[in-house]
Image (cartoon, rainbow, N blue to C red; front, side, top):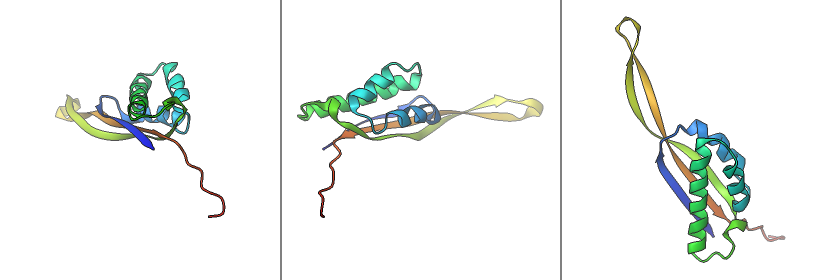
Amino acid sequence: MRYQAVHKFARIAPTKVRHLADLIRGQFAGQGLTTLRYMPHRGARMLEKVLSSAIANAEDRGERVPESLRIIECKVDGGPMFKRIQPHARGMGFVIRKRFSHITIAIGSIESPVAGQ
């Protein structure tokens, strides 16, 4: 079974969170929470909240030990941008892009294929 949680329109650039998502992808859910808890990044707090929400979703749907499930999908996609103009030299304008991101984490059990088929 697959359980997921999504945080849309997170006010952080996706490039700042992707390297943290790469660290926890494939780990057990409990181990991923422990990994994120001791990281000093702001993006780690956001990933930690989404992962704990996915664990709570699994527990709510009847999973007995949700911390033993693996993180099967952890992706950070780009969202919309606020665009601001900063005055620049000779009457030009410089565009500042304030980026948003969509964080998706899915946990579940990995079924091994049956031998001989």
